[in-house]
Structures are given as C-alpha cells and as structure tokens.
Amino acid sequence: MFPNFRQAMAWVHTWFGLALGFVLMACFFFGSLSVFDREIDRWAIPASRHAAQSMPSFDRLLQPIFQDMQPSKESLDYLRDRVDGPLPARFDTVRSWGAYTTHRDPVLSLFTSYEVPNARDPDDAARGNRTIDPRTGVALPDDRLKIGSQFFYPLHYSLNLSWKDLGYWIVGLAGLTMLAALVSGVVMHRRIFREFFTFRPKKSTQRSVLDLHNMTGVLALPFHFFFAFTGLVIFAGIYFPVTHTQLNPLHELHEKLEAEETGLPHDRAGVAAPLASVDAMAAEAQRRWAARGMAGEVGLLTVSHVGDANGYVSVYRAGTDRIALVGDGIHFKAGTGELLREDPPRTAVDSVNTFLTGLHLQHFRHWLLRWLYVLGGLLGCVCIATGFIFFVEKRKKQHAAAGSQGSRVVDALAVTTVTGMLLAALTILIANRLLPESLPAGWPPRGDLEQYLFWAGWALAMAHAFARSAPVAQGRPNPAWREQCWAVAAIAVAAVLLNWLTTGDHLARTVFIDTYWPVAGVDLFLLASAALAAGAARRLGRRAAAGVRPAPRAEAAHA
Image 1 (cartoon, one colour):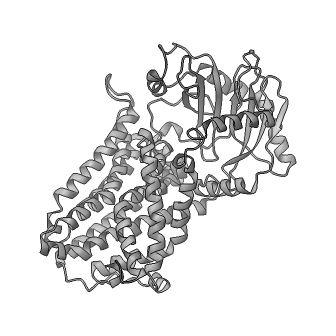
Image 2 (cartoon, helix red, strand yellow):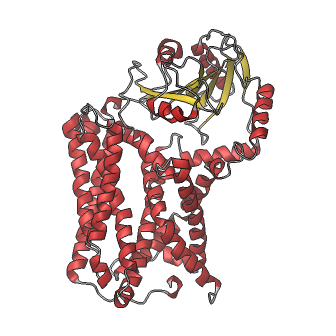
Image 3 (cartoon, one colour):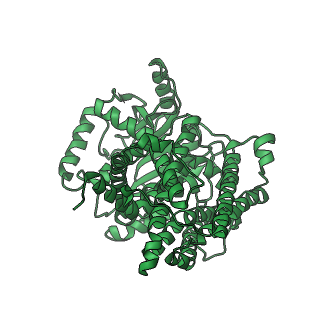
C-alpha cells in the first residue's frame, strides 16, 4: 500500500490532522484562554473587580444564603419529563450544600442539590447554584455569564455540546487522533532537531509555513503530548462509563461498603438533626493541617444530608501550593462537630491520577508556569494553522489545473477555524460590553444572548470565508485571511475602548493608578492580539500585491 513506513506515517499525519485539526484548534485556543478564565470573568463582570477572597464564615454568611436557595430554572426544566407527576413548588429535602473558591476567585460559587419526589431515577437531583460576593453575601445577577470559566473553559473540552455528551466524545476522538498525529510526525521527520532550528520566512509561503509547522511542533511536542494524554485520562469515566452502566449494581454496592468503612453515611437516616458550627469544624481542619506541617486555606466545603442525623461536613484544603487541585479532606459529624475521618495518604495509582489531573488543570499558584501553559497552547494553534496552510499551498495549483474544489473548501474551513474563531471570541467580549444591564421582557437571558452572538459571529466569519474563497480554486490566495485579520485587529482595539467607556477602567488606571492586573492583563492581551493581527494582515497584503511566485518542490515526506 505504501512504499515504506515513513510514507504510511505521512499519510496518517496528513489526513488525521486534517480531519480533526479543526476541533483541536478550538481545544488549544480556548484551553489557552482558560488558563486565565477567572481573569476573563472579572473583565466580563465589572461587579467582581475586587481582590480575591478566602472562604468566608459559613455560620454567619453562607448558611442563611443556602437556606434561601432553590433549584435553578435549567435544572427544573431538565427534570419535568423525568418525574411522575408535577414538581413541587419548593424543595425541602436537601442532599448537599457546597462552596468552592480558589486563590484567584474574587467571588464564591455556591451549589446545592435536592431530592426529587417521584423521580423515576433515584440518582436524579434538583440542582441550584449562585455566585456571591464573599465580602457581603450579595448575589451577582443570575443572567451574567462568566465568559472565562462558564463558556471558554468548557468549550475547550466539550465544545459546549451537551446532548448525550456529544462534545466530550468529539474532543476525545480529536485528542486520540492528536496522539497519533504526534507520533507519526516524529516518525516522518528524521531530521527533527535540525528542523527545530530551521525557519526561512523569506522563502515561498509553502516553504516558510512548513518550517514554522515543524518548529512549533517540535518545540512544544512534550506539552502537546502531555495535554492530549491527560485530557483523555480526566474524562476516561465518560469514554468508559462502566460504573453507571454495565457495572452499576457493583458500583452501588461499592459505595455502600465504602460508606461503612469510612464512617461517612451513604443514605439519610430520616431523623431530623441540627447543624453544629461549621466555622468551628473548618478551624479544626486548618489546625490539623498545620499540625502536619501543611497549613492552608479551605478550598472546598460541603455539607451532605443536610438537616439529617446522618449529615456530615467535609472540609478540603485548597491546593494552591501543590499540583493536586484539592485534597486532604477532613470530615465531621454535622450535628455535633465530632471528627469522623481524615483522608488517608493516597495510593500510588491515585497519586499519579491526581498529579496528572492537577497538572492539566493548573489551579496551583505559579504565574510563570501559567504563562508557559498559554505559550504552549498558542504554539499548538500555530502548528495546526500552518498545517492547514501547507496542505492548501501544496495542492491548490494542482487542484486548480484539475478543476477540483478540494483546496478551496479546506482553505475556507481553515480561515473559519483560525481567524473566524478569533472573531467569535472577540464578538462575545464586544457583546458583553454593549448589551444593556437589563434586557426588555421576552428577550433571552443576557448570558444566553452573549452566547448566541458568539456563534453568530463565528457563522458570519465562516460565510465570509467561503464567499471569498473563489481565488483558491484558481491557485491564488484567499483574501478572507487578510480581511479577517484586519477585522480581528479592529475589534480587539474596540473591546479595550469599550471596557474603558463602560466601566472607566482604562489601562492607565488598571496598571498605574489602581493597579488591577486581571483586567489590565486582558486589555493588554487584546492589544497584543490586535498588533499581531494587523502585522499579519499587512504581510498578507504585500504578498498579494507582489503576486504568487511558483512554490518550490515540497519534501516527499509530505506527499
């Protein structure tokens, strides 16, 4: 079939990369933005522009808020067809309360779950959530979208396609394909270290993009491999759903046996009981961490079986000083504050799993490493984008002579994926700054409307890319690349100006006067993006004006 193994690997690298490179581009780009998801949240929600806060008092501040909470509208809508009879007007049996924060969070995320009467599936729960200012307890408006943590972050691993977990499966397939592309790419390039130091920007487009593709691929190869692999590890429970499918009875038995061994009740007792001081339990947990030489803040706090004699409180240490996200849980009897259990040291397998997961999620406190994550993700974007361009440049003259539209379609999809994705991300930021605080009656919630405009902006960029792609079928460049680069530059600058006009937080203030780096960082990143896009547009314009020179013969390895 192929004359040698390298040619076979070249075929795998080319066609696997092309087939799912469009998905991987979104994963890398929005994954890079997710490194600073909390900072993007602060830019998007001016009410949250204050210093990060630690876990507040449960007894004085959080408990009254939890008692006032009820399931969200989205949760109730999901449950309507999964119960026998109507849903109750109020849910009184609380399964759990929870509060979560990190060292970068100025706001506190609260979540609750409630038992659902007459539910067909006993595992179904009605869920509620609220975001509050931990200094005062005041809730942020329910319709304000946390663009970084609620939209960009899940987009990089689920494409925000929740129907039957379709997005997770698409991204999982893309991640597996990426591992194959990385291995085949290493096999293809026998002179891999030489190619790492070879970049000829003044050569033809085909030659220069191939050099850039090789260089960025080699430079960030360990990063790309690690993140593709750990992403698959993190969501292995979705890809191999044995616990709640084939082995569901065994899973339920294991949970009950584990509850007996740990002393943490699996079910409610059905006997009402008060809740002791959770603040005292949190203080005792911190005292025990300090006694073990690992003093720290509370990152996650949960109350299970609320109001029941079997209720218990779990306090987890924030993992800002280590790779693991949270850990070292200490559990107390909710009614008395009696210590029930301290989590034992992790097993070797569990330690490896939490290390890989924590290194992928990077919730630890290390700003330099955080920026290196961004750099690695953007290098992945460059590697994929140059792969698209090389594919088109190598074939477009041949396709033009044969009357084929293949290169035209691939080029238009590449424009959509690269510059179109940037335009979509900028569109949601512009919408965030332009939409009024209160929308007219009958309109979608403000956060939903921002998401609709994101997808509309991406669809518009795709329509423009295809509409302007006719020159590719004639062996010439697609002007959509240059035009969308100019659009990216203009809209990025507009986003910075709108942030100034709508909030008063201009760069002089956020950098020099009232130094606030989360917002200043987003503005500076937007301006840097505008400068790069404008530079790319000018370079593309000069190439178009100079005409297209015949490209040198490509390496046989990329046939």
